[in-house]
Each structure stands twice: as structure tokens, then as C-alpha cells.
Amino acid sequence: MGYARIQGALKHLNHRVARSTIAKTLKENGMKPAPDRPMSWSTFVRSHAHLIAAVDFFTTEVWTARGLVTHYTLVVIDIATRRVYLAGTTPNPVSEFMQQIARNLTDCEDGFLLGKRFLIHDRDTVFSSAFRSILASAGVKALLTSYQAPNMNAYAERFIRSIKSECLGQMIFVGQRSLDRAIKEFVEHYHDERSHQGIGNRLISGAGPQCMGSVQGRQRLGGVLSYYHQEAA
Image 1 (spheres, helix red, strand yellow):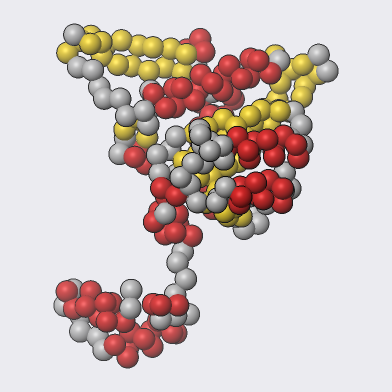
Image 2 (tube, rainbow, N blue to C red):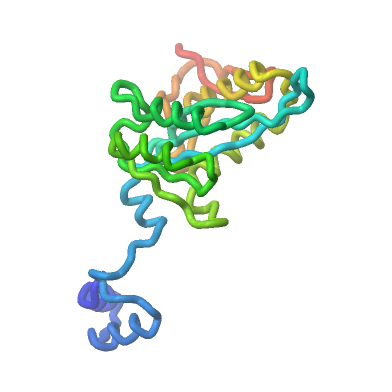
């Protein structure tokens, strides 16, 4: 807001302040005039949510023939809709794996980043220059978060917290197939059966309630995930 707009807003609150006083107050608090005032990160993300996706890894310990092995899962989230895409799981996220992920995300027919202009990710070395170059060739600019600033990637971090606390943290996995199945089941639950406060407590899939029938329960992964709904009459 510029000086005149701030002056008008204060006038509606019955405070009459000169523009010079507003300018002096802003200057004393380190705020530049409106044309040069930088937009905050949270304001930028909210304003351009339909053009932004975010990506991050989470880790899961899996029992294998070689003992306990850490597996890395890459998840991408659409900021505006909260829809997520499982890009892949691997015990070794090497450069070739990441470059293939970038090509899948930017595929011209069904890539998850179609219509997006920005991709938020942290400064992990797995997000290499080759990875960003493939994104850039498809018109997607990588936005790197600051060091030790997880809140700059809050949407991806929140999904990871949900899948770990509600699902993965309650299970023991033997082999990657069991992990893949659990992640797949949670994502289906996340899209089709779990309301989200960030989009008005709606389901991501957009399905509405079925009324007039009796209340039924649905379980996934042996009861780790539960969902209640009404049967169609």
C-alpha cells in the first residue's frame, strides 16, 4: 500500500494522519515506498499459488535382505489444489534418477508441472543444475528456499508430516513393495477421503457427500486409515 492508500484506510478508522507522517513512520521502520517495497514470501506464494508447485524428499527405513535401508521418496504438491504426485522412491537418489524425474514432471502430455511456472525446493545437492536445467527448458523456474528455512516450503513439509504421523510412522516395512503400497494407499486416502482446511474443508477430488443412506466406515492398511461416509440411498 502507498502513502495515500494507507492514509485513506486510517481515515475510515477515524484517524487523520498526514502523508508525511506516514512516510516518516514507514522510513523509520525500514519500509520503502510502495513501488519498491519487496513482496513477502508468503504473499508471493498465496498470490501465485495456481502457478506454483513444491517438491521435497522424505525418508523411510525399510528392512531388506541387506538389513535396514533408508529409502527416499520424492513428492510434489500443487500449492493451489493440494493435489500431490509421487515422483518416485529409491534407496539412492543419484543424478540420473533426478534427471528422469524432471523429464517426467515436465512431460508435454501428462507432466504434473504442466501449466506451472515455479517449483519450490530446498538446497539439497540432489536438486542439481542438470535437474533445474530440464525444468527451465520446459518453462519452469526453480525457487530455492533459504538455508534452514523449512517454512518456505511449508506445503510440502505439511504433507510429509501428515503421511509420517498418520501412516508410515505406525508401520514396519519389509521390502520396497510394502512401502510403495502404503504410500499409494495414503495418497488415495489423502485425495479422496480426507478433508483439507486449506481448501475450505473440501476433498481434493471434489467429491460431495452422499446423503440419505446409513453411515458406513471404510478402512485402509488394516485400519491405519479410516474414512466414514453415507451410502447412496
